[in-house]
Amino acid sequence: MTDHILIERPENAPGVMVIRLNRPDKKNAITRAMYQAMTDALTAGDADEAVRATVFLGSEGCFSAGNDLNDFMAFAMGGTMGREVIDFLHALAAHGKPLVSGVDGLAIGIGTTIHLHCDLTYASIRTEFRTPFVDLALVPEAASSLLAPRLMGHQRAFALLAAGDGFSATAARDAGLVYAVVEPRAVEEQTLAAATRLAAKPPKALAIARNLIRGDRGEVATRIDEEAGHFAAQLKSPEARAAFEAFMARR
Image 1 (cartoon, rainbow, N blue to C red):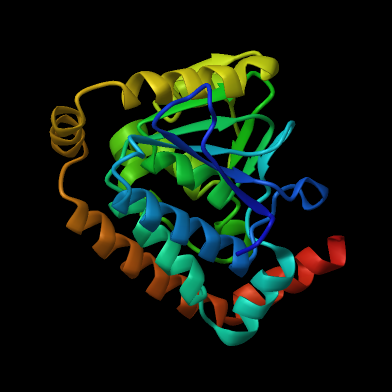
Image 2 (cartoon, rainbow, N blue to C red; image 1 turned 180 degrees about the horizontal axis):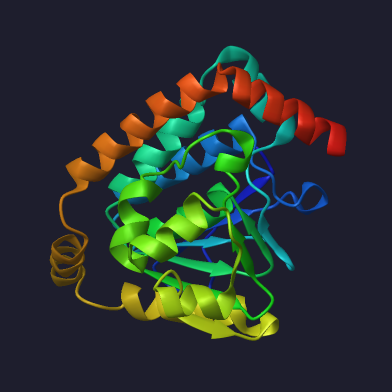
């Protein structure tokens, strides 16, 4: 377990489990240990009948800048996404409770694609969503290549995942990635309120409705693995090596 992921059961949100990214000094960049902690929390939440809804939150001004740079460079050297990352993506896609997320500020890479798996997302007006996969000679992950076109249509999904264009909170809402845009100070309050309302509903009926809406999860799991294979192959490629070297030089 890592203190960079906090698992909370707020007293004012009965039935809700909060998974909070808590590494603000590094813009909530996600390490292998953080991925593992989130996987453990999702698995435990699935097994706990007291958990009726799950919430993802970040810090003030930042949801997540994506993968931790040191871990990401280790992935590049090893030519793999890392087992902890893939396990988390599968746990996220398979989670049986409603998923609600609150986003304030920076949401990069996995900081964006995680919300494609959420049932409701509340974003502050200062949030920016961006996925610079292709700029690093990599490919989309988290089944985003499947889920984003379904939500956003081909051209918006292409702009986000391939062109690497940034989406403001309002553009993301208009595209279907975000449910509501709120003031920064209201993100957590409204996210928890929505999750609490879901947690109070008849759980079996809600689970059936959610499963019908989400459709075939096997297809999502297959796409996660397919993307991971391409991701690993690209990590070993000369163009990825050149992109990493250019990225590090800019830093």
